[in-house]
Image (cartoon, rainbow, N blue to C red; front, side, top):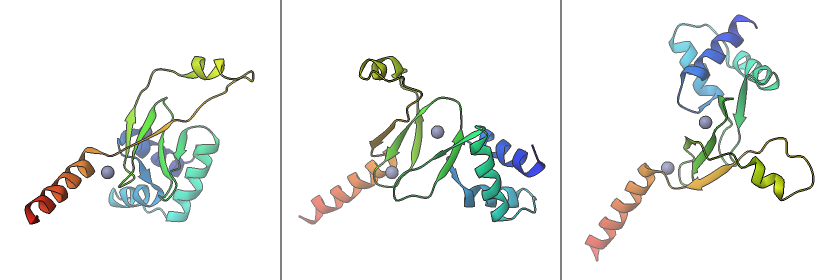
Length: 131
Ligand SMILES: [Zn+2]
Ligand SMILES: [Zn+2]
């Protein structure tokens, strides 16, 4: 693995965030790596192909990159924030629903994150006061 791929992989493994290519680029630049955004994109593509990281796609938001260790995601419907969660393995259940062999599944569960929930509550309170 080339040096750039290695530092990108390390950044993703060490982070609990779900970073976009731009965020990874900024993080690496901030820690003194002279690396271009194009190089970051290139290496992210390769790391995905090699199965070292995974790409998380949510419609309406930029792609984010994540560790490959098995986990699922809660996705905030308001701000698009991803939170890690581990549901029990559904492979057996899903397998029972189909005759074909299930290779993997990718579960994305929508919710409203605590931050957005708080904001909503505040707005509601403001409205109530104005009544
Ligand atoms: Zn949110
Ligand atoms: Zn994740």
